[in-house]
Length: 602
Image (cartoon, rainbow, N blue to C red; front, side, top):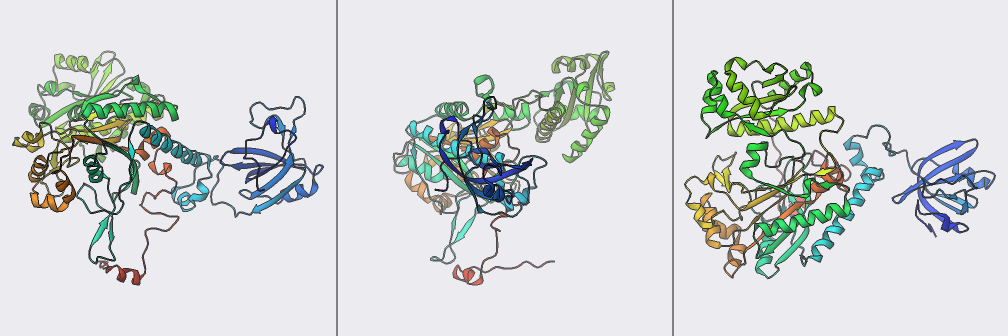
């Protein structure tokens, strides 16, 4: 038998038993001729002792052990001498002294990086190249174990609520759903391609037609997008759900119950104020500069346009005078003097230039009143109104920016996050509570937006969403004013869920696509199954998808989403361990009717 127990499992109940452990050598220490070895597996660590007085042959073998060797050791468990028990160790009541046998099961080269958690973490490329070794790090192993626990809990939760776990196809048809598809050539149908699903959107809606009124799936999704800290390259997983005969509030109730139960069951974090906040898309943009705000701290964007409209500075007054297109927003930072010096304040200019702003406007609250380089452009009463509206106290500062709405909100939203990060770093993590989960529903997303490539009107979110007002909403002349029954859930500055009540009326669905320049024939061509199915009675329905990897990243306090994957792609969208992507043989290309055309270097 290779092992009778797992590491960290032995206790006083095993005294007198002959036991065998097989595990990795974590480290070794030599002390006065006695060798101490820490044996480690995924369950924990057990310290074993090799004393030549007990077994000289075993001691000689142990003298050849090196880090990451796999060894097997057999001994009889005995109690520690009186007074030598260690209550802080799981094995603290027993002695683990090898008096019988030990052998090497497998030798190891010196690992390419340290695994004991001391010192600086090896760079990502080295760790991911040897991910099978990297998984031995306690933090990496803990993430993998947490992922397994999270998935098991999620499946059990939804099954207990009468949801059916349904696996939808991986090979499907290409669909214009926002991101680029990954396509797969067909050998049997030359010139034709499958696509990997960006999401199971159409399939899960078709399940609603087929009487599957409550569906869920831990769904693999594939999108050809550039990776970033909160977005994994190539593939990701979402908790995908759809329900029939529901309205928006029904969806919210299910999601909130799931998260409350999940956080309580598998996390030591708490939900802020034990509630889910809610705001419209417009409110989120105006107040936080983003549709995924972090509510764990204040520093809201404050509207001061009416005050700046009275300024004697013509630039400010002209911008502030057009409240339809432009904005003047301020951010207050309390106790500024405690956080930043004048030198640090100058460093903000670097951040400002990164976001194409020309300068940084500010006022500081001193003991003798409001001070700043722009005081001369405001009357005393206007300065007093700025102090009152922003609730400034001595030591506080407000930053402001004036420009068009999109620029101001985007810039000030990013500046808010930048400032909070700096303050949190200065206060050593006391500014932002890492143990809090601040959830916020963002509702009423714009149905349409201007495509940044074509500069034409296009869908701003899910094209299958219900417009507010149903088909009559399309009578609005300005399509950018049409909102939809679409919702996101933000948590700590990340989007963790997206969903909508679906447009289940075929006429309204065709009308929506017509508004972005697509004919009914194109709808039939691209979404033929849905077009046909929706003519056989489809119930009102809606759903959502939770970014499973992203919420795990938040729960585990990981700064990068790649750390919650067993075998992640790198920041350059590569599988460094398996060397993917890679070239394939010419005969494979020919069999798939594919020709690779190389670009000219010039």
